Amino acid sequence: MKKTLLTLLVPLSIVFGLNNPSNAQNADNKLGIEINGGFMEYQGDHGYSLFFARKPTYMGVSGNISHYLSPSFDVMLFGGSGDLGYYKNVPYSEPPFDRAGFTARLFNVSTGLRYKFNNDIILSSDAKLFPYLVGGWGFQYIHSKILNQTRNNLTEFCGVFTGGGGIQYNINDKIGIRAQTVFNYTYNDIWDGYPFTDGVHKRRKLYDSYMFHSLGVVVNLPYDLFNYEKGPKKPKDSDQDGVPNKLDKCPKTPLGWIVDSVGCPLDSDGDGIFDHADSCRYTKGLPEFNGCPDTDGDGIPDPKDRCPNEAGTAQFQGCPDTDGDGIPDIDDRCPNAAGPAELKGCPDKDGDGIPDIDDKCPDVKGPAEWEGCPDSDGDGIPDHLDRCPSVPGIAANKGCPEIKKQDIQKIALAAKGINFETGKAIITKDSYKNLDILVEMLQRYKEAYVDIEGHTDNVGKSEANKKLSQDRADAVKAYLVSKGIDEARLTAIGYGDERPIADNKTSAGKAKNRRVDFNIKY
Image 1 (cartoon, rainbow, N blue to C red):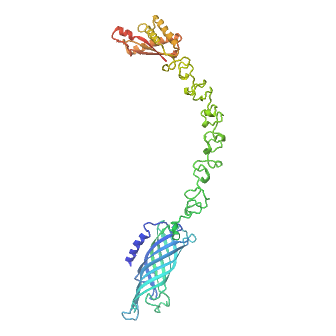
Image 2 (cartoon, rainbow, N blue to C red; image 1 turned 135 degrees about the vertical axis):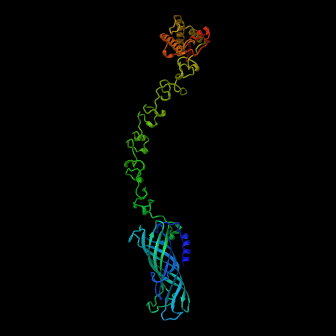
Image 3 (cartoon, helix red, strand yellow; image 1 turned 120 degrees about the vertical axis):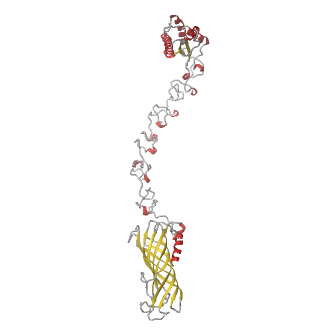
């Protein structure tokens, strides 16, 4: 029988999922699978061996399928198999009739109910250890070998009443173990070989019975056999907030409210307004704005305020209109100067259709192609780009007239006639007439600029030569300014001996290198 017990336990543990346990049996895990193994003890016409009162002991196995009905009751289908026997000496008899007894192989299938004390009425349903009672009725198959009887074998089917109790311990929330004792009263009085008592135990007309003590493993699965088409039943959630009743600390939350992990109303931003009614769940706000803030205090909640950081009016969706032109600042290109809507709120002082902010000549009308500027001298160069807007000129000279070739030659010749005292920046008097020619040219070309360049030969140190050339260029500039030429038109640069135009090895070359050059330009 021990081999039979091991043979049954291994496949049952695989089939019934002992390696994949689930939660304890309850409304969410309705299907229970159980296997048991233990000892069987006889009580009948021969006597009794209940509660290990007599040796030897006999072993059996059983398996149960239970289904949750309510917190107090489970319905059960259980069956088992095992060996049972009993031997006793018969006084005053001769061998081979001095002993009486039997051995039997039993099989039974029964159905019934289990009453659970952990039903939150007697004991808490959350306890790890809980007791129960079982009772049921079914059928028994018996194959018995009778000792010292004319009929040595007996095979019978009969009914059986079953009743008992046990206690279960949940190892964790996935698996438990059970210890139980069940008494089986059969509708048969002859499978032990005696139809009635021998006069000693006074059990006339009572049927043979036996007791099964067992230890088992139980696994509960989330399946509902009475509603199998719908699959595993979802945990009960009375307020339909997505949190099962057993975890819900606020079980009466109104339908549609947003809740946290324990089923209570959620206030994500902590502003006292629950998320279901908070239009700004993650930003603290005010009740009058459904939980949204009004950062600029203009009475318009931020989600509806186009300018949430600047106080404005409802007319402009929370934006101000600083210049009062009817265009809110957020849409106004010129928020501090009133202007028409067609120019996006910018003024147009000269009325040329180009807003002042884009008009290069905001006080004078001009076409858009010239950025709002006119071409006063008609030379094709708009005034804002024309250095000489009142005199026709050419693009190369930025709108100024071309400098005549003979005038360029005259300027170069006059520059050659500028002399200085030896080693000094003092202009000699014979140079004044040439300087006056330069004054005349600059007065003729009033928009032109001049670079006055001073140069020396290589006699002496370069640093001294460069300073001398700078001083001489400055002296020329001072003379021109004294004759009425705007200083802003003049730039004096001393190059020293860096830019020779002749060979410094000869006296003639050195004389050419000591010079003042005029570079006239626009």
